[in-house]
Amino acid sequence: MTRVDQIIRNTDLSSVGLSFDEAAKAARKYGDELQHTTGISGELASESFAKLLQITKSQTEATKLATLAADLSVAKQMDM
Image (cartoon, rainbow, N blue to C red):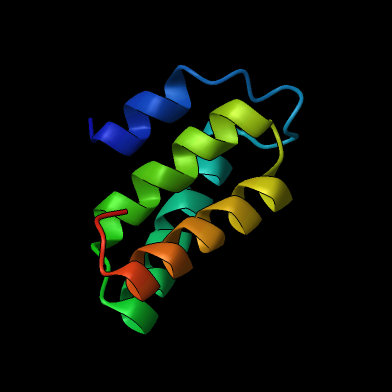
């Protein structure tokens, strides 16, 4: 089980409206897309997205916040 899977398994997805498989797929897709556009590790981006999904209970908000964190990371040349 990957770290992304562990985070999502520990998330109450009932308020998010996603199944475990859908949430895991969304996190991995986000990570892959971010890796392609920024060079940030796909696994790291997926984990960040999964953590934000756990906190915000919203796929839209998790995406916005993860993208903001990635933009800041790239602009400041910092780890995400």
